[in-house]
Image (cartoon, rainbow, N blue to C red; front, side):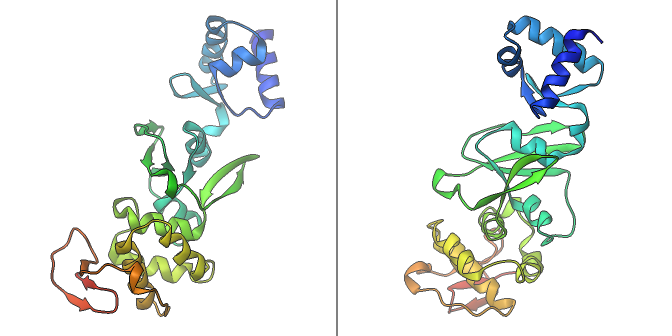
Length: 241
């Protein structure tokens, strides 16, 4: 390994730049794009760094931390949906799919055995996250309440509805019901509030939500299911599970 590469590696580690781009190297070392690309290419061949996607790299041993990678590939963003539920032990198994909420549009990314899925959400829904530390790096993750709301609104990125009872049961010791309802109201979705209220009631949590926040017509608990089942007048829901 040449001195230049040794010096670059040492500098990256000293500055804790575990994720970097070619542009970062140019700025850090005051060198051209071509020269930076050559150095990083040799580091890649030596397995000192690993390319996540074109022009974006991580230090070699950081490939074992998919959540760290997920948080760096698009910004602003935070980990949510099934992935966040697993982190909070509200869901038993983690998938090879990692779910990231972001107001930006980005194609899915395959890296090693993982598939990173970037779920585009509206700006007014981009809230309710906190930082956790992974290998000295701050990674943004949905708060427990927000992970539930995200998953219940975008059902295809959360647990199946028939498993949501278990998710809520596992969450009762770590969430604030008031915050859960407050976050749900910020989504401006009456169907979401109805589903949440009804499912909380199923697990023994009695709450009151003003009728003005609930749908006027009956909605299906499972939007993809048939319009038949148990009709729940309190929530204007058809329990079609």
